[in-house]
Length: 157
Image (cartoon, rainbow, N blue to C red):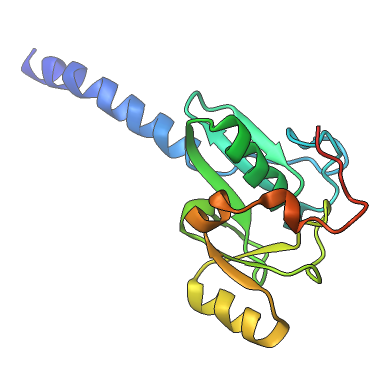
């Protein structure tokens, strides 16, 4: 009886921990099937994609880091996790701890020219070689994101 009471006390904690762990993983994106929740274009390049996992567990998908940044600026959603691809490794990394370089020569689906890096050192190293402006997440969210786009690439809603 004593063990059952202890188990019942900890069951909600175990359940919530399991739910939280699942929410902190990136959702699967199906290229050429899923669309960007900001510009409504199809997601064709997984390595350029970004995503938010909202507090309710719903994924919000983007074809470009710039689209996710614009969405965050305009919608200000509460999210559990946010992911971008590291420009060098192509692996999912946390948006919240990433550093960014913006350079119009960086190819991205909506031509924002933003590349994410897992560390400031890697971002600065890339910037020194290829040019561009370094941003933290906070700086990126305060930037005039629409000014980053190359001319002729306005697909925003």
